[in-house]
Amino acid sequence: MPRALSVNLEKWRQVSKEHFSHITPRYDQGRDFEEKQRWVEDIKSRILIDTQDWVLDAGSGTGLLSAQFAANISGCVLGLEPSPAMLEQARQRPKRDNLFWAQGVSEALPFAKETLRVVFLSQVWHHLLDQERAAREFLRCLKPGGGLFIKTFSHEQLRARWDLQFIFPELMPLMLDIYPDIADFESLLSAAGFSSFEYRTAERENYLLPSQLLNFLREKAWSMFSFLSPQGTAEGQSRLEALVKAGDAPVPFPDFQLLIIALK
Ligand SMILES: C[S@@+](CC[C@H](N)C(=O)[O-])C[C@H]1O[C@@H](n2cnc3c(N)ncnc32)[C@H](O)[C@@H]1O
Image (cartoon, rainbow, N blue to C red):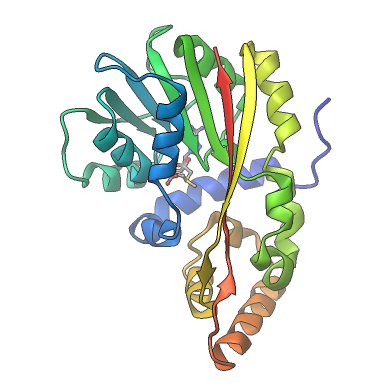
């Protein structure tokens, strides 16, 4: 049974599309604090990736994680990304023999069936146009025994976010609406035909300066900021400015992650 949403999904898709066409030069900076190698190790510990194998980084953005994968596996990596601006940025990364880029969406993959060993998505699922269709596409293109890995946030993790609780409380309902929770993933992926489902949560201690958060807000570095009302923006800004003025002491910003793992 689908959850009742209060967010206008059409509007969210449009905002998300526009966001990635203008944020490109500043995108990596907003994701600096994340630990990237952990995902590569997690996936390698579950699936043997051979020299002949392909890993798809769906919604690869500027290629942050595609490049990390390519440098640490013996197979090939394809970063698939719909936004021309993000893709252009990804193509500026140092060239490697096992790293490729293509424009496209997850709902219509440019692969024959049973060609991929791993499909990986990092902070992409909540931007997809049609999640059920994308899940069926991933299943079609995975080899038997291959795995779909989705890096996202759980609702428990969203509820614990300091910035959403204290600086931008207006955004909390939106975030809970657009991010599926663990049970939503389980029902969607088992309905799509995946044979197993598990998940892992992780939390790494991390702090940000209020001035850094203020910069992210001013630059609208995260797509969620496009949904702040003028009042929510002004309130968030003045809360952060007050913290900066009071000494800019670091505030908790744990690197929360949920990894969904579904095998074919
Ligand atoms: C938050 S960014 C994540 C980028 C990258 N995976 C990372 O972790 O840095 C979300 C990306 O998903 C892409 N995206 C949006 N809709 C998509 C779709 N239907 N299929 C694939 N990617 C999509 C966006 O263009 C954007 O680059």
